[in-house]
Length: 163
Figure 1: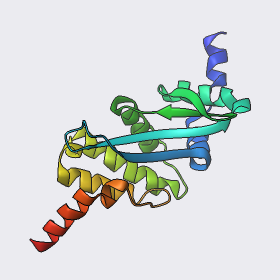
Figure 2: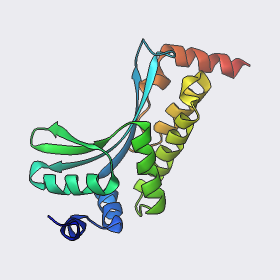
Figure 3: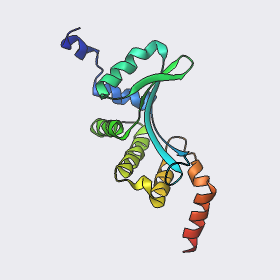
Figure 4: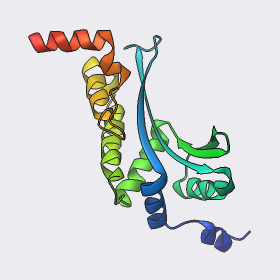
């Protein structure tokens, strides 16, 4: 395949933004990890899930974005999954240059803020984890993180409220 053929296979950046508006997900999980200094891990990721019959589009998007892995999501579905700060920084830059148009734009803006906080190492402090957990709880279905519901966090918040 020539470079010209390969270029024709790549979707336009505007098409990718539109596709992600409909099918993409910016997600930040806070997972309990006793071996971490604060006992919690921040796990941001970007995902696009598609039926396996549309696997080629996931490969083309991945190739255009320059990062990500295609893995089995569940049953006959695959996902393009992007993790890791270096790769997520690419994703943030891409969508800052090629903005989303739907309500997903707000999720992306929160996601970008969390990535920025992590680059500044804010997730390594109690205060930073609290901020990240609060931001993450405003994304997607707006669920309260287990971090925010943990007894230690509730105790810390109660102490802060008394001060």
